[in-house]
View 1: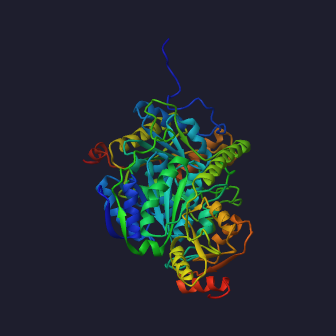
View 2: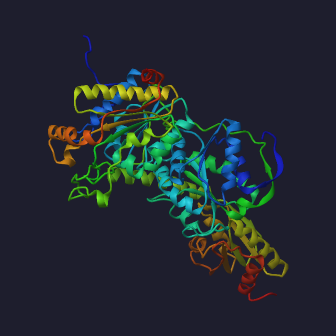
View 3: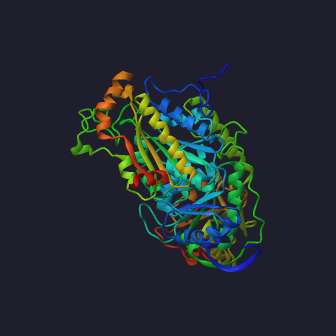
Length: 356
Length: 254
């Protein structure tokens, strides 16, 4: 797509096209609901742009193929859903340890185990706290519309390249499956960043490159991890993204991301109509977590309400961000159950002492 | 002065960490000689395994990637698909290739992935101190088969070349040994053929090296080679298991 177009697209397909538009030419996947359309779109479109679509024998193989392509210096991605992401955690950890950029998409479904196939946000902890073994982080973006499924892809690739680390789009079955009008294309395909560290054949013109995560000397590994954490601190200072909706004068601040944030936003709007000073803070990155936005809101808000499609995961980060200076309540649905605006409104009204 | 013998350029100057009598050094050298002779060092990307050869990335002068355990064929797939002009090879042991990485190995072969796999089979997990491997022989004593591998409970060894040669995507499969000069020379020919298979775009190639592990077998280096000949070679016969080259096809015709 050379010209920007406004089209009706499914979230999964829009994300796939946006990845191609962002210069991604290597997709390695394995079938799983509810991300299937993303892989199917890639299977159809990648050959047309001279790219690679490969259906691997497992999610483990797929993430390692991504790792190989990324190590060779090429923009690569994979997509899956919750149980499949668990299998990818090995590869994600190795990519963190080898400082490799790549994009991983998680179109979340209910868990644990095989769980269900309905939308969920139950992998928040996995994405933000332990996407693999070891001291590590990955960039985690949380779109809440099909348009954001598009807009965050290029950014995720760019920041992954910039900071040499994996990035994740943490979506869910609702965003993946829903159709919305979306503006897509019309942007220049970025010139790939120079990757002088890549293992792509030295052409007898430089020393050999080694892409590696093994360091047997404890102090050497410690130094390396500490350096990586300096980079993480820089990211935490520069890269958090958050949408603030009616927060400036808010008494009750709802915190929600992704699909849950769409529902919470509707509830906040109705609460305002009923005279309740409610607002919404919607993290667009959950690692780095937008702490400053929450700290600023804590100066005037009397309480927070975290709304998630899980049993309460991001709520921990909200409490940490406001350093427990204000009460932080929680409302959630799980297992693939989607909360209704009325349920969230009821929570807001209860916190405000009933409808006014 | 005429140089009559030197280290291959595709090997670095780093001293290897391998035990005395281990055959990894010979196998590294054969691969490096072939990289030199085929002029591939500059376009080669090697994938090191987890296991004794994990630090192969320090020993080869070409670009190297260190893989998670068993995933080397998947890593190599990613590299080769991203950079079709690269000469991509993996270097893997028996636990890596035939236990934890069985799926990656079999499917890379089934896809006819245009890569070379160099498989070092010494019938034991070396780096972790001598545990039973998927290729440990029946009755063989290891740290985790202290009474000898009992096939009733631990099952049977996997013959990798035979297994992979049944797949249409496998273009070249040969089992070699490096226990004597004659076998070393044959092994080098096999390595070269594997790279040539990739250069010709014919698909997946594997060279399996029957190797010794004096340290974990509990033998001197020379005793280990005797044990290899007496026990390993009968179970793992040397030879070409698959070769789709025109030359081989021609030879096969009467």
